[in-house]
Length: 421
Ligand code: LLP
Image (tube, rainbow, N blue to C red; front, top):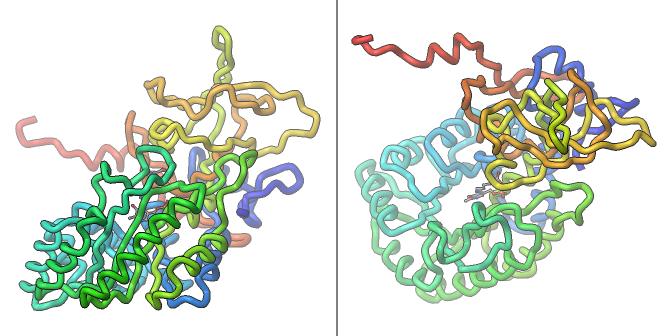
């Protein structure tokens, strides 16, 4: 459930008509709903009720400071994967002890920054990385709390580009080698082993792969404890999928996920961390765009809109489906038509949807790409020198621009001319 709903035939974001925002900021733009972010965070928080737990929002999904602040104020932790995300989490007021540092290629500089600024733990992905964290910690006279990310070799049954838990993926340490790796970690004086981490992929639409992975983690916990390690924390990653197509069956709910976690891992008495991104942010955001032209092709109609693959890359990159709806609701009984919905970028890949059934639209009409809150703005670029589009956050009957659209001048002025030109 989200807070983008039609009222009197026009789409609202919470209490604000989307047309009002479009008039104020121009199109295209991202529009987020505070209430939806808050609701989704609470769903996870409540789903783990009864367990000692922390929901660490995966910052990569939507990293605007205002979003992090909205979630941080509810007590959310943050899962970060770069020095930049770490800096954002701190800037949003999230204390270091609620920040988990994940990622397969942390640099010395990033490690030092997080150790100096404070963090909950590093999720370590390889032995060379373990050595570097140890050496930086010793240099700084600190001890780095760590988990080791294990790769359980489980098929997440999701798009290949976002599956991470199979042995062919670059992530984690093969679970079969975990005991040796933990024993090595235990010998390093700059590290303190606190738990185990696992993340098998994103947009999972079934609980079974999670359960398979978590059963392996439960078994490993017992083994590592028998080996003398203090395993007090289990980081279970993110990955719960969202219903991108309203017509499809919905993926499991956080409450069902939470019940499974309790069933499979509850007896271990560990603190549970989860790192959801998409489920918190995905349906909390839409991208609003305007029809520039309706163009008749040989055998199809193209809807050329002012948003493009540089603004929302998911369809081009993952063949992802986004529901696309008109801002002015079509009148019941309207005869539908089909459009290929495309952006202005000079690539055929700049296609959002093919043969999409919609009510007829005309030049100047506004449309919304639903479920664009996660991996939308954060993955955008200025390809074709199209300035990054603004982000707007709605809260009840108020809205604010939380990232401005740069002018052409601002965009160009980031380049500099070398002395010989
Ligand atoms: N934790 C780790 C270690 C991750 O790598 C990810 C996502 C998450 C948590 C959050 O997963 P989520 O709950 O959002 O599924 N750009 C792609 C998704 C990439 C996901 C990368 N890792 C997309 O647009 O579908």
